[in-house]
Length: 280
Image: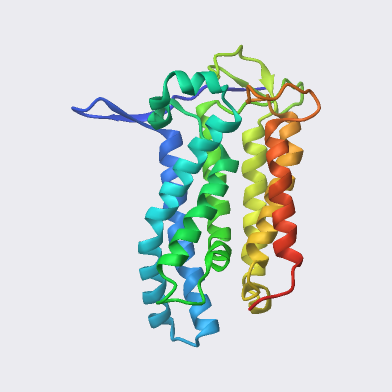
């Protein structure tokens, strides 16, 4: 068994007594890396589709990324927070104190809600730039975001592991992890390191998508990349969820978790985008 109990804080800002947590740092690092990848992918799109030179394509890609980033941050945080309260908390909890929604540092972000929030954010963003970039609708933008999103997701799950949250079920496997101070206050038992299972899965999906997007026939087929992402990611979630401790107060079945229930419509949407007639 592996014992795991690192400090959650990297350091505390002087004068403000404001702790910088590993989870937040890894989250921010994932977004930062994703931004550079996004610019590179959008540049390649303009080079392929509009035959721009590398410099002009990169200028356009930077302009789009600069305008998109605020939409994505808000969509991710608000969607993840709202998803957590809708699917993982009892209504009596948040109705008693609605301001808890805005206390992000108290934890509680749902990845399914983040995905929906990002989708809605891209719809608003694509409507905003429609006149200037008519070919960049929300599905095309989601295609561009798919590869970077997998690296960000990997970083977030590693942050969950450091934070000792999203716990696995008890296990006696050689790689089981004993969390010294689980975030939910439970006893330090040997558990499946489900955070690392997901992180490894996301990294594999990242390399699969990165390889396929090097092929113009796949890359330029609108909806293929995000469709494959949704299918692979949420199929992974269906599998990994069986080793997770149920986090929702709203579902009480041993044979299914809230995460699995929410993954099914995402898989259906992914299959629809992946197998519908190709649109270029």
